[in-house]
Image (cartoon, rainbow, N blue to C red; front, side, top):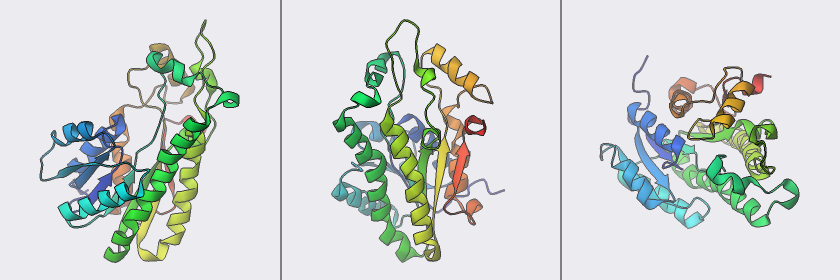
Length: 267
């Protein structure tokens, strides 16, 4: 087995400064890739880049909701590394549930604010659309490319809202925007996979379950009890699946959805 399946490949990773983004960045570099680390938070992505060999990464501040910013992201990657082989669409608004953010989850569907709906669609869906559109000319000119769109189990099945209930507290909810935008990931993935099938540009989705990271212990326990493997994922447990989809190991896959969720969607 090739220990560096992405050697000589150039990857654009959006949402790189987030919890999973940082883990993906390490996995991609370890697999031999050169990586454009992209995030709207300039300081955070520069700090992340400083943890790697400067020859292997470039930090790029970009807002995926803005076409000019996305085009500049692709141009900067080309200027630095000469090509773009892989796009990982990881940037997303994902309201995490913990004690500190419980108030952010108080809006029911009936009272959910329009501005929050529009903001999530702008990042989670329109941002993915714009990034795919921007890398397309480069990949088509090269005659090859790979796109990996990051999905969620809540794009496949409805959230179990019981997980977010706390005795003695008011009702809280995983918001409608996350499910709706993540379900749209699969439509975009399949459309582009079929659209570019004869152009040697593969497009697949990677669907993830919940990741344990400083949540309320009671929530972590409830989540684990709901999952066949009995626990939440560690941040480093998705890197292997990402490398598989980004590399030639998945050369006969396009339009597919690789689910890595501890068995959540199996029952």
